[in-house]
Image (cartoon, rainbow, N blue to C red; front, side):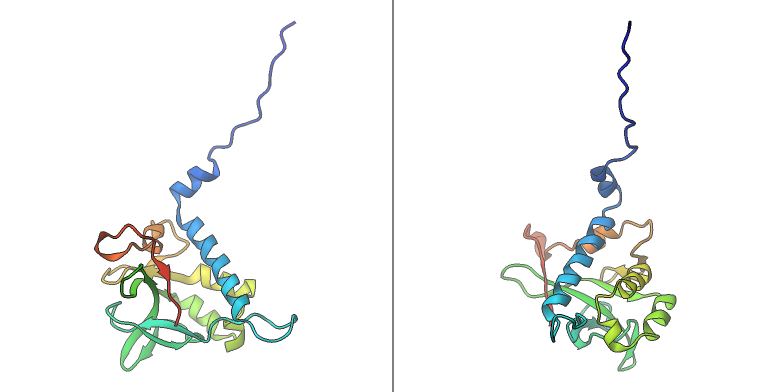
Length: 177
């Protein structure tokens, strides 16, 4: 009697292949984890206090040529001295000056949803707020003309993993004000 060995069905795509195909998933997951950790580190009050975000983040109103720190509750894009300001994700490589790795803004629906929340809610690590930000975020490199939806099909992982200037092989570290 022949015994037939039945193998479990193979998945069409493993985790590694999926992350290779869509690296933004890994970047977003790491970014959310980093944000939650940062929010917990910056939280104040007792154990029942709602975690709050840093009070200031970086923005740019000249397409990433320069950056400035301002209130983290601002919802980019916004008007800043007659220019459109967006969030600037600033990085630093060992021994180098800080630089803007990429710019971030929220689409109209995201801006509307975030504007309906209080400042303390916008600074919280609440899953609803994180969800709004993830779904509505758009990113681009300084100097690029096209914004890409963070959760879209475009290869935003390339944008979200900046490289050190001048071909330095080091991994840039995020910088907060």
